[in-house]
Length: 316
Image (cartoon, rainbow, N blue to C red; front, top):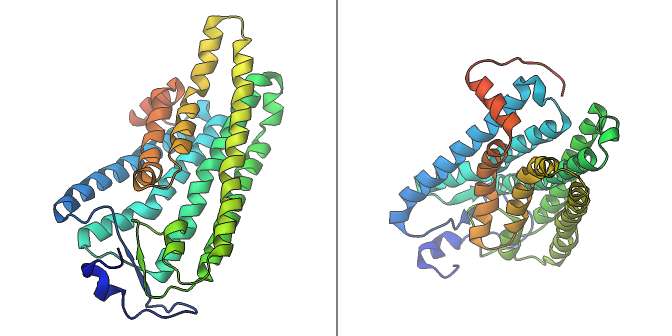
């Protein structure tokens, strides 16, 4: 990419180390170099972004306005929808502006800010999916203790812990990137600022960043995935012990939506471009549809919301 004639002139005049100035900029490589594809990419990304925001916003409004959905499960789902809106809003609007204006630049401060919020809201998805798996585990495996274990206080503590952990992880990675210098090569081979591409274009020693990414990033993925796996092993075991076929079907149906979201999210957390688009754009787009299509409570709440039969109330 660095030898591409189109970008040779844009890659000159960078500082050779130390702190970056306020005028320092990166260039985002984007999704395609074909001019005839830019218009189609803009329309596709715009449509997906609008549907993502609208779909997740409807989920939040449906849960917030329907007293029947003021339960821990839907409280976590509303937080997940909120995180999805913020997650996709971190990257897609900037990509849309770059496609429309044919200007690939992003300032140093804007890039690090985008990185921080991308990591925060991306990790928030992982932690919330883990929390929702635990909620399902308690509901199915320990139904008599559910109200006591998943109290309102416990739900707020769990969500607060999720937001705190994600911010700490994001701050750690962003601070380590801030310590790096960027010299002669500043073209980021992606459509947004992410850890891997930023480390590739740095002229500093990135060994510390890579080790932290390996251990901290690995822990953020593997520990929640292990907890989700353990939760669903317990859930499936408990469901299989249910004597009636109707009861087993109902329990499987209850957790089927989240299993689909978990499989979609963790199945796409890999490094190639197609997967990046999947978990930054497609997963937040599909989440509200997966939950609403498989959940009669959400369908009923959406119907009442669209018909104007809503009742605003605080509490779960």
